[in-house]
Image (cartoon, rainbow, N blue to C red; front, side, top):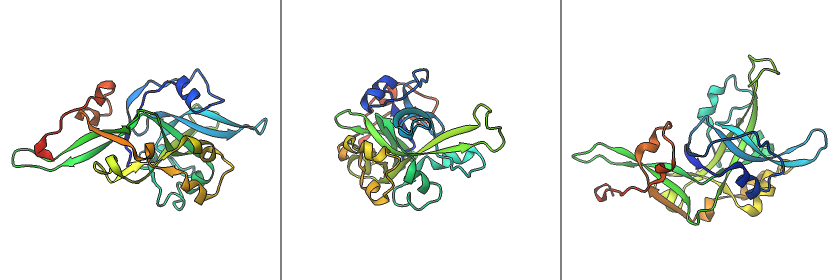
Length: 248
């Protein structure tokens, strides 16, 4: 799975990197070294403008944790932070979004946890790892988004409509695979347009665009356990720690 990630690039950097044509400079998110479920996150998506019919590439804030349109409350979101690629075109919560509402979620890298077995003198524990492209480039995680309306609120009430998202995952390989059995999928830059195009609905072609982040050239390093608490944030969470040889 992908339950935490890092996103520290500024909106202007993301606008330039992803060739965004529409965004609201008034919107702002602080850099985060510990993005957690239900956080607002940056996303890149394409929408058809109602007044002109033009497709624009937009930078938007979405809430991480997809809430299907038919859900009764936002509490569904934390259970749907990830969508398995093996079933994403079949499950009712995701199949309509996969057909029409795909997005990219910019990330510097993601965290996974490896269980360290207990010894005669220590308890079992989970060691966090930061997994990122070897070349330091940004990752464009493959995501889906959905619109949800609070059934208890008037249409014009603040927060009556929410836009939420999920990250598509697959079996882990390479550096990520030695830490955790699942990992997020990404979209290569040459395929961003095809993935985001809301008129592109061929499930087979879309699935073919899903790739391992950084083409599998990933680095995994052990980081402090302070990342385990979602209230902790800052670049110190990426400090490398020395793994105990006795744990190997």
